[in-house]
Amino acid sequence: MLLYYITDRKSLAGTDAQQRNQVLVRIGGAAHAGVDYIQLREKDLAARDLERLARDAVRAIRENSATTKLLVNGRTDIALASGADGVHLPAGELAASEVRALWMQVSDRAPVVAVSAHTVAEVLAAADQGANFAVLAPIFEKPHTDAQGIGIDALRAAFVESPPPDNTGSAPQHCFAVLALGGVTLANAGACLAAGAAGVAGIRLFQNGDIVETVRRLRELEHRDPRNKLTTD
Image (cartoon, rainbow, N blue to C red):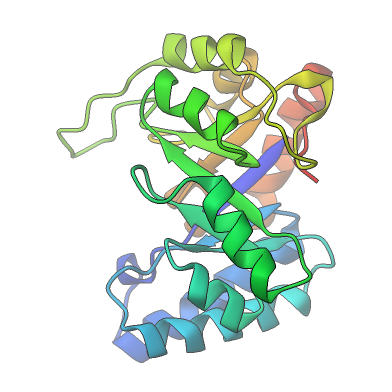
């Protein structure tokens, strides 16, 4: 089961400096608790500030975990410059295969490339283009928003239809990994796993509350259903 924390420092209290410090604390805590991936998604930052934050995030992760990986949202250049492990591509960006090829021109470290998807067709495209995994959203309707969830059935359809990607980061059991995002909570995460999700992603799910307890309860769901022990390593 893959756990994927997406950062949002602006949702935290305090000044800009306090928000920055708080999100780094949460990044380190998530790594220590055993979250598999952390997506640095701070789209309002200028390139220089984002690179500095990414470097500090890499440091916070390395100090707390030997396995947690940092992906930078939409900025392959900053991911490379900061020593991050890969990139998360929003829907409609370059194909994962193109990003991987660009990365390997300047690095001997193969990147993790995750892709956002909002439909089953976009999941299929991500798999075909060589992504390590896709994050499908929004599964559930989010409170206090107009965003309508695409539902568990879409997640189930993506799991059934997704072919294995043609790269060494594919999941075992010949199944392309799809993570559930959007309104995912401790109460409904089990339904996502039962529908075939390889894991769950979220902002509030991991950024709010006790991260150690959150991870513990999610891992309990994994132990109840061993079919969901998928990985992209």
